[in-house]
Length: 263
Ligand SMILES: Nc1ncnc2c1ncn2[C@@H]1O[C@H](COP(=O)(O)OP(=O)(O)OP(=O)(O)O)[C@@H](O)[C@H]1O
Ligand SMILES: [Mg+2]
Image (cartoon, rainbow, N blue to C red; front, side, top):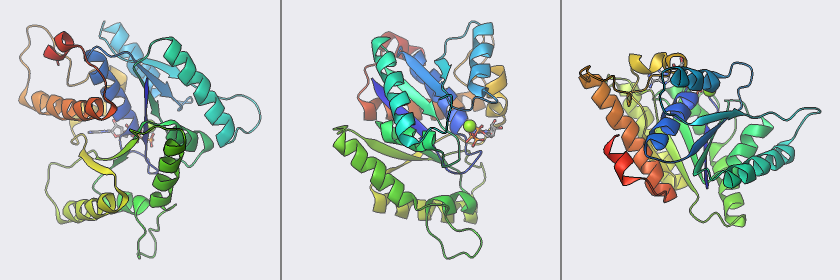
């Protein structure tokens, strides 16, 4: 069983959307996927699951996780995740996806420490860039040095003998426009990923179709029988499949060849 942690210390970069769409794309490949929801106030993933079940659509199983009582620290959360992992292994889950929040909370750090693969979502904006890289800008200092987090998590994986550990920096919610700001951010992120030895990968384009996905449960992979598939849906499906295939290859997962015909 493999653990994928979706993180970013900037809100609204598309973590939850990626957790839902990736979880669904992997499920459609015949893998058994469970997604841990830490946003227990609003439960966007639970809503997503409910909508898909309503329409008899396949998808990952969502579970929420909370540690009750006291003020749990990173170690408490690591213990909780270890139990969750053991349970998932007993249930023959192939992939456990943990969707985190954009706050440096103990559970978010612990989720990074558990991962076989971390996916950090970033958009092509300077604000996102400054969450990742140190900057000389006066008002947009990086909250924490991201390179240090990568180093910490990587050493942790090494100690736990997770030898295939990897990290994707996922360019997400990409604009259709080619802009100078976007190009500059991309150049700086390329430098950063080269220096840190992590992978820069393409995520999802900014599309209207993703905006209400958590509520409707409808993803680009869902056909409606008898209705023609639109071009933008094919493009969206291609970007989801590209990300899912990278994850499958990186984690060495075995997909069902018959199921793969359907995606
Ligand atoms: N590729 C996309 N195209 C268009 N809208 C998107 C895309 N990805 C996410 N969104 C929208 O952007 C908003 C934020 O997305 P999402 O909730 O997935 O981000 P998040 O990183 O999980 O946010 P938070 O930090 O609050 O948990 C949502 O309204 C979502 O519908
Ligand atoms: Mg979220």
